Length: 527
Image (cartoon, rainbow, N blue to C red):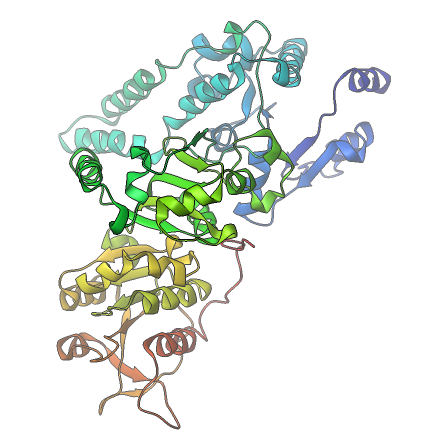
């Protein structure tokens, strides 16, 4: 009854509920009951989310995700919650035992049909979280890792090869049943490495903060203090004039030979924040290591208790496998770099970027912006910032433009928005344009002043278009211009020509003016 619920609430620490979705009953009896039995301060959110970003933010806040489902086909919301850092509490039925094998998770995460079993396990989890500050066993982090490992089995990076085997079996004449058994067996083997952890702890689990990780690359990491400017761990961050070339070349060679990585130095507070958000959203970026001051690390990265009080939009997570190096004093960081850095912007990172996508990915996500021999990194960065704001995130670059994209100045001039783009490198832009036209029917507009050029006008009600920008001095290559469906220009009252960045901005806006409505999705809105 209500009195019993009130007694249990008084005995428990402050617990807050996040209830996603709506009450399916006609009279909303469940919502009314929840709002009646729980005070408003206990309900952080009740209802639908406006978009996927808001949905992800609520998942990231949760420590426990509970299901009482009587029907379930897979459990994608549970998988997403656990992948974001929540511990699961689920009925031992439906699809849940397949997601979380009972031999591993039944004791602490799967409850029987009796309500008491579920309540007991929920209270046990809550008690574990409350005991966090007094628990130095790391049991909670281990528990999250185990649960997350279980659902990580279903990431596309893992499942793609399994599906390849499935379809290969069908192509060889195997029945769907036989091919499916191979899939089930493979998944089972991957899950067998997951073992129970909650029961191993004497007390229970620990918790770091309400802002949990969203993916395996968005997680906390411990800072490594650098006390000497000659420390080899930061050899990659030194400028040419201060570089120990033997050590620098050794590290660069090792990264390239062992991991196929070609590193580049990027940096700046805003660009780093946006880069990490882009990674959490699936961008193709490989971070190697980070270097900043202890003060900035405390403000930006959730790696100590003081960060718990920071504003939510300031909190960003760095990949656990990427070392975070810090200096106690900014003076030492300046010594490593051989220059005086801006105090509030002194965040550096070694990354591999850009990483090429498949052309098909871009074709499926028009509009497309193409660069023919654009050489200036600042121009590219400025154009990409405008493109991102206009909803254009598919980029094709010639070899020359690709080299400019690798220049960190492009990222800085884009204010970090270029990290959200997908890129394709072409060694023959004419052939690539032909492939795009052949596969998709996308209309390709070359931007150039010439006899056959017409003033740029809106493409129409859809996004099936691409724009090609030429070199800052020589414009479009004549062969590239011939490959385009139409050559357009921005009408001018005076002067020779617009800067390529200005011409690109006006052209992109005008081509898309009658297309789908542009609405801000909340990405890259850091301050």
